[in-house]
Amino acid sequence: MADLTLTTFNWVPEPPRGFVRDLRVRWALEEAALPYRVASAPFDDRGAAHFAHQPFGQVPWLTDGDLSIFETGAILLHLGGLSAKLMPTDPRGRAETTEWVFAALNSVEMASLPWGMSKFMGHPTDTAAWKFVDDFLKLRLKHLEPVLAGREWLAGSFSVADILMSDVLRVIDGFDGLADSPACRAYVARATARPAFIKAHADQMAHFAAADKARTGA
Image (tube, one colour):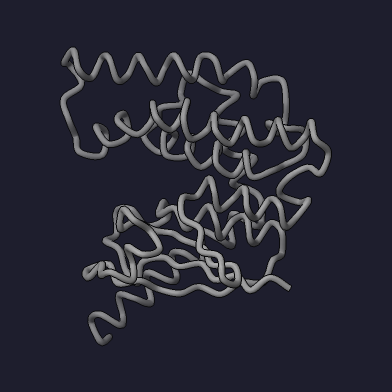
């Protein structure tokens, strides 16, 4: 049996809770029913040991025995190799899943990050810079919409590609950015209704809530 440990921050401020990317890994582990434990890295003191596992000082990372893997895409592809519930076993299915993993991270999240950060920071939306960012995201969603209108999941059965893509779209939906993309919105609703997501989300929220009590002594 794999010896899997997921490391996330011991605490984060309230706004990003429910969106910290260890959620993607928790979700995959729950979908596959793989046993794992959660470890914590200090949010306020990212020392050499942290950077040895994650060279950018971020989370999460996963250890599997003597392997240490960072970046959620890489972690989910690794877990896909451990469970057919996360990655098809046939060559075509594996290829389709892998290409959609990269599409979620490179084509869609690359467009959504500046858009989402602008929304989160309350930047003005009447500037040329905002129009560029908004148009860039809308173009990506325009191309994704017919894909999701024609299928339940990206690569046949539910896979790590759906974990990544739906989590990227979930952030956009949180700022009502899918109002003109009904298939994308329905896809997010399907994915986040899965019991594994619900548990992973609740576990992340509970992890940080427990950290609040530890910090305040309450």
